Length: 373
Image 1 (cartoon, rainbow, N blue to C red):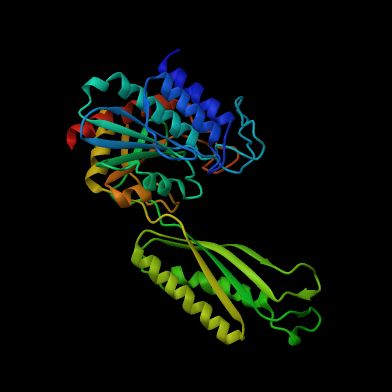
Image 2: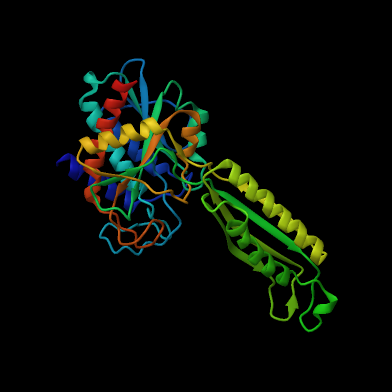
């Protein structure tokens, strides 16, 4: 079996056996087995799920990272190796990322005696719920590492295409929940209550003015209400309504200004409608900010290995890799996967032809990065 065939076989095995964030027990066991069979050292970090391995010797160290978790989505891709777990699917391509970095590890192992240092290889759990990177950092996985690199497949790019950018790339991810408390009443006598649904409806509309009227048009921001919950029958005005949604930006200053403006709007509505409005914010990863030098370096290596390269556009999605880049410099890159359906879609189906070339690229990137340090 060729390396390409092996990597695709591993990817398909992972795809058939997806596990949700924090539950990647079987995935972890498979990775340990495959790494062990290749003679690659697994480091003894205290991790419930996930694996950290290492290739090479010496003082200088860089890291490569892959994410390993799946999503709570029922697969409809139609592939022969479809998920065997109801309601769980690798709909973001983390099985592909894992196979790519496994391939890079094998290639690096084959050249271990020629490496100018060590490559630490992170198979990170729980990317989708933004907890895994913090766990690996706390465990010490970045200790003595000088730079880190990672990837995401990009279904909008053809296979053989590569994109990244220096500076901000992926957005911060904040989740918010509004709880609007008025006064319940009979639907036929609304004047006896304080209609939380009317307040919530007007609040949703007002929030849309924040991005369009309170933020510089040259700054990126998304403020979306994604859930409205209130009431449980047709003839009663509910006492309370919940709104839930997300805020995405690329700059901390914009993020904080938007949150302040949202609080002002909520306070104004509470006063105007004689209601109570409570806001709870849940912080996800910060904006992912690539080191400009390493991003250019990663691009130059991509050109050398045959990729068509371009500057990536700003991405409004969140990415747990941002946590690593808060600790050490590095670069996160996009590699074309040419799927008709996008990330997190039940019919997502990335082209497996990307796997072996990407493995070759990351092995080369790691080797050259060690020489660059």
